[in-house]
Each structure stands twice: as structure tokens, then as C-alpha cells.
Length: 148
Length: 185
Image (cartoon, rainbow over all chains, first blue to last red; front, side):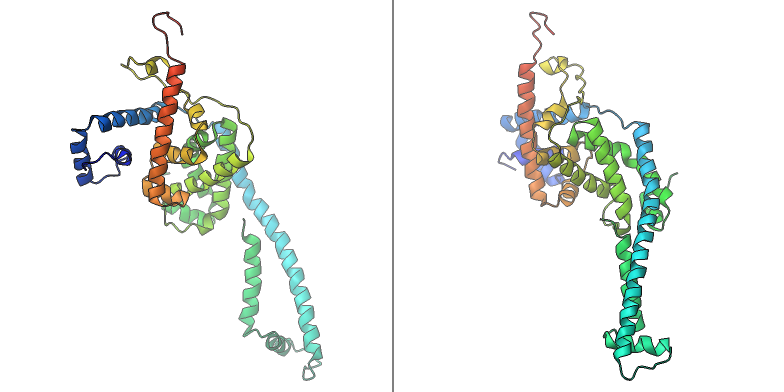
């Protein structure tokens, strides 16, 4: 390295240069008082951080964090239960809609034949299979678990 | 416990929330030190750490292990700190005391520098790169990943941040130099 490059000095002190780059920089520093002086000023900045102290996080604060984490699963379970109740209500509404769709079908059996009823409803709603319906329900459940 | 981070993360993801407590004990202090450098106040730093760990606990299911768990926690903390910085209007400063170096005869020897006060005069971006490099010891690439910027941006920000800090250090020393001749403090 023959030219002065301030960012190289930073990378040098940060240990981000490879062996060849270090050798080139050190060769440059041997002949460049300006970069050598700059390097010393940079070392003062590094030194400032090295000598700084910081108050420690006290054990009460850590205990509070543990407490908050402990309360989270309970809050999530409550939120899940509320969500599940809402989903159950939605499923009932959807089931009602399905029945109403089926009842409009002239070929629909008048007896309670749920297997056929559901199959016909699935056909009406263009769902390929019962598992698609299950997937919809599961997806809805996972949305209630997802925390933003 | 002696369990490595990866095993703890897997345990948490499998439903063992006690394993997350182990992660809290392991990293809360380091996170606090970083938060303190970004926020400058103990109460704010505590809030940032708490919010970081709670958010991490809620989202750890999505952690894929592409980075170290500590790096992931740091990335969340940096965002929490930035969010708090935008919403806070005023802050009261508690000094980050800097001990004088031994054997030096310059003004620095008799002056306790207020690092936090100096950092506060810098932009949030400059504070971030300085804290991540000097307090967390992260590499340029790790910092780039956390800050979602190119590596070159990290390098240039660090370059400017350090020069700016150096100027402010010079200004601080000129204003607080001890007058040895007159024995003032």
C-alpha cells in the first residue's frame, strides 16, 4: 500500500486486514509520519472504549425479565383460547353456510348423511379435498399463535 | 449448565421455555451494556433489554440458526434502541465513567471522560457502529448483516464515527484541561 488510506488504518486496528494487507500497511507506516500520527489518534478512540465502564444490569432487573417471560406463555394461552373460540364460531358459521349451500342442491339427500353432505359442499366450494378444509382451519389457528 | 447455544435454542423451540431463561442469564448483561451505550440512561437501557428478550422469546420459533443467537439478539436490540430513540424526546445522562490511563501525562490523565455524553453527540448510525464494534466486537460483515447495509457502508460509517468522536474528545479535553500551574481541579 503506497497511498494514505484512513479506512485502512481502521481496518488494521479492527483486525479486518489479511496478512498481506497488514504487511503492506506496516511498510507504508514506516515511511508515513502522517498516517502514523493518524493511527495514534485512532488508538486513543479505541482506548476510550477499552477504559470505559458501564453499570451492571442488576439482579432485580434480570429477575423482572425472567418474570415477564414466565407470564408470556400464560398470556399466549389465553390469547390462543380467545382466538380458538373465535375460530370455532367462524367454523360454525361456515358450517351453516355449507348446509345452506347443500340445501339448495336439488340432488342433495334430505337425510342426515354428513359424509355426502360435506363432500358435496367441498365440491361446491372448489376445495379439492377435506384436507384443504383442515389446512384452512390449521392456518387460522397458526395465525392466532403468530405474535407480531 | 454448560449447554451450548444451539442446544438451548432447539430446546426453546421445542417448548422448553426454561431453556430461554438460561439464554437470558447468559446474555442479559452484554445486551445491557450495548443498550446503555445506545440509550445513555439506565432505565432506558433496561427497557430496551427487556423488550429485546421478550420479542426474541416470542419469535424464536422463526430463528433458523443462520447466525449466532447472540448476533440475532443484538440485531433485535439495535432495532429496539432505534425505535426508542425515535420516540424519546429528552434523556437524562448518567456518565459512562472512563478511568484515566496510568503513566500518561497528558490532560487525559486527570480527566474523566464522559463517553456516554460524547456518544450522545453523534448520530444514531455512528453510535450503532461504534457500539457494535467496540462493545460487541463484531466483524464488519456481522455488523453489515445486523444493520442490513453493505459492508462498505459499515466501514465508512466507522471511519467517520471515529473521526467525529476523536474531534469531540479533543474538544472535551481542551475544555476540561487541568491547569497544573495554578493547581486548579
